[in-house]
Amino acid sequence: MEVTNRYIVTKHHIEGTPQESDFELKTGALSLSVEPGKKDVIVKNLYLSIDPYQLNRMKRKSSSQETKDFAGAITPSQAIDAYGVGRVVASGNPDFKKDDLVAGLLSWGEYSTIKEGGLLNKVDNMGFPISYHAGILAFSGLTAYAGFFNVCKPKKGEKVFVSAASGSVGNLVGQYAKLFGCYVVGCAGSQKKVDLLKEKLGFDEAFNYKEETDLKSTLKRYFPDGIDIYFDNVGAKMLDAAIENMNTFGRVAVCGVIAEYTDKGKRAAPNMVDVVYKRITIQGFLAADHMKDYKDFISNTTEYIQSGKLQVLEDISDGVESIPSGFVGLFRGDNIGKRMVKVGED
Ligand SMILES: NC(=O)c1ccc[n+]([C@@H]2O[C@H](COP(=O)([O-])OP(=O)(O)OC[C@H]3O[C@@H](n4cnc5c(N)ncnc54)[C@H](OP(=O)(O)O)[C@@H]3O)[C@@H](O)[C@H]2O)c1
Image 1 (cartoon, rainbow, N blue to C red):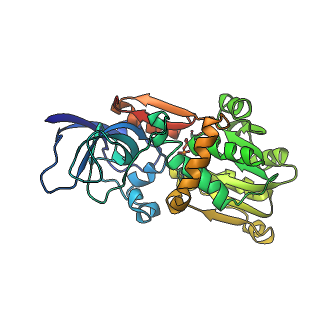
Image 2 (image 1 turned 60 degrees about the horizontal axis):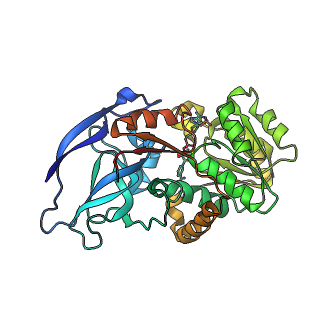
């Protein structure tokens, strides 16, 4: 049987803020059977993750492209691989059979073909909505969990600052930190997001960074006794302001620097004398380096969700054609929680 597969590509390399016009929808015929002797797995995509790091892959050149296979350069007009969850429709790989629910590196389209050796795992649904396996129970959740517990090395009662706090990773960092017993302040780009952080997610304080003219004194106001942990999702001026307000032996987990992805002119210039004399640790990390903690992460996170201690924030649009607007919107702050696209019915 043959189907028409609709998928999204970039038209050219993207250097600044992405626009919807940088993308196009393509169609191609796809046979839903695997050639004899091949170990391909053909998957009908259900939910696809929309992530800021993809922008660095779309540039002509970025140091991120040399680091990990999944962060490699995207060639214009070629299919774009992305994490997601789907159903197997055909398999030449003995580890997978038709109708298995799977998660892994799919692609921004209606169907994906995963070659032998590609990232693909069977999913035990555990009674959760399927979308959770592309978001909170996948890399977004692991990033928050491993970044906070392994990189920030929190102690109860410490003071934690999280940027992009209503986003996919940020909202979970704040919630894990509260559950652990820290004092947590988040920043986000609108009053609606600030209200949500305080009223629904239990952050101690939150502020709209777009309304602040001097971030250094803003942080001083929220942390009169200093910051012990800064979970950085944005880089740029926010990182400079956080460093100035860090306590001695403070830890900064550099998860991402989204403000710098669209404009390298905004690159952070933290005061390194502060870093030296306050003995601050600044550590970048990638969730993929923390797979050894995956089981712990899943068991704690599912328990928190089931007991109602952890709120799940999802921001899901419909249809493959909504991928470009969903992606571009990340850089405008359109999303609240994990941005995904539902591309197929189960
Ligand atoms: N290290 C890892 O393994 C790993 C894994 C996943 C994600 N990340 C990184 O973690 C960060 C968050 O990713 P996510 O998937 O959770 O995305 P997200 O936070 O759900 O979405 C991005 C958010 O960033 C904020 N933002 C956009 N442009 C900004 C700017 N110029 N300045 C300040 N804030 C801006 C927006 O919220 P506002 O309304 O608050 O502006 C937007 O909603 C990104 O830097 C990403 O690259 C790293």
